[in-house]
Image (cartoon, rainbow, N blue to C red):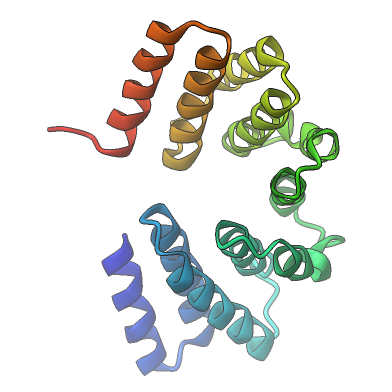
Amino acid sequence: AYAGCRSSAQRLAELGALHGQATALYYFGVAAMHLGRYEEARDACLRSVELVRRTSGDINEGWPMLFLARAYLRLGEVDLALRSVTPIRALPDWMVQQMLPVILGEARLREGKFEAAEEEVVPACSGVSPRLGRMAASVLARAQLAQGRVEDALASIQQALELPTSHGLESEIDLLTVRGEALYASGRHAAALSWMRHAARAAYPIP
């Protein structure tokens, strides 16, 4: 995905297809984030946002900003992340509106404002998209765990894992990892190790 989106963005740029280039760039940003290449993700999303503004299109216009915010969060730039999503807070796109609380919740989590993180992200856990609900639940569980509420965190994870959706790579790894952390915090070390192994296999599948 990383190589394919990068080559697609380059080819679309050569053709002058700016909106297509913008779309390829933010997908490239997602792939780069999965690989831990956060600076590349940030730069790709910044370029995507610029192209969307130039074309004045309204198709998926919120997504480059959402992914830009996520890249900033991975780089520890919380203020820039929050500033990135300010223009799209009222965007009439239900998927964007379900994703926004995930961004805001993670931002509060990184600020150490754990109760605020929980309040921000709870609405997204039961939104229309089960996949986004799983992403939200991983942030919720981390906020609960940070407050010492281990059983609440485990319940949030279990509820998310039972959502009827195909596995999303990032949300799957996050949920399995935080479950392992919660089990370890509760003294269930053998179970924690087992779930951490599940997370490792999800991140690095062995043929």
